[in-house]
Image 1 (cartoon, chains in turn yellow, purple):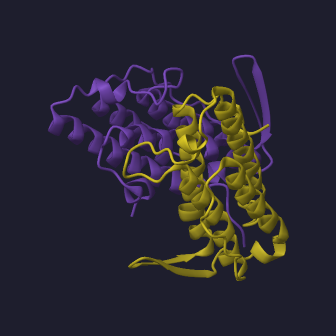
Image 2: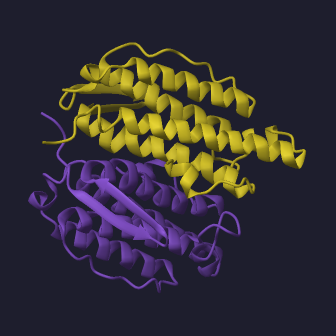
Length: 167
Length: 167
């Protein structure tokens, strides 16, 4: 008895992406109710040199999309970072969810020791699958979902822990 | 081959708690360098009705302490929520790390199907072990560590993603 790679990743990523849809929807409703330009939320940052909400959502999605594709050994779809509205960001989340649902447990299970290599700018990363999931994908994913939540919450959007965690 | 309950929890919780120590230390250095009263950071919230930094750190620690104790079926130590300085919050993290290190893999492994029940205020929660870890402990833990990071970052503390993720 133990946790499979799929069980430790896909169902909870899917749940959190669905929660992210709700959180973004509540952001839209908030902006509409205040007569606020949605861009104030989409472009908002917790500090000038931190990524804006749009980028937080894009990265959260890409962790799941690229991460699951790397584990499965398939080419991930490419999504351009062009979203400028909360509705477009929700579409990005929905596309990510559909891609995630297209991946079958047998493509992820058994990848615990699979070698995962990639580069970000000048940094080269090497992991085995379980380590990649536990020490990279999961922390990065939660970081960007939480920061999206924190930015919206900072602006007064009526969201709570239950929205973050889901039912 | 799969991931054990211990492997999916303790090493990464320990790593992130160590990262949290670094982040809090950098908060202290920042406050000192600005001649700023540390309380401005400790009591800071992203919005009035959200928990302050002190509570974010306390909850992050308690997720690990209480969560691992519930899985292991042992009584967790009780820590009073009395910290008013970043140094005291670092002590809280260190105590949590020591407790975490006292738990052996064999106390956690095999708890995938263990029934976990607890109440928070009027809510009663029932999980089995793997579900408790993946859908409750891990998301809650990352939420509070990330929000601690976000509060400090919002104030201008010089921390980056590398501090969050660790080496």
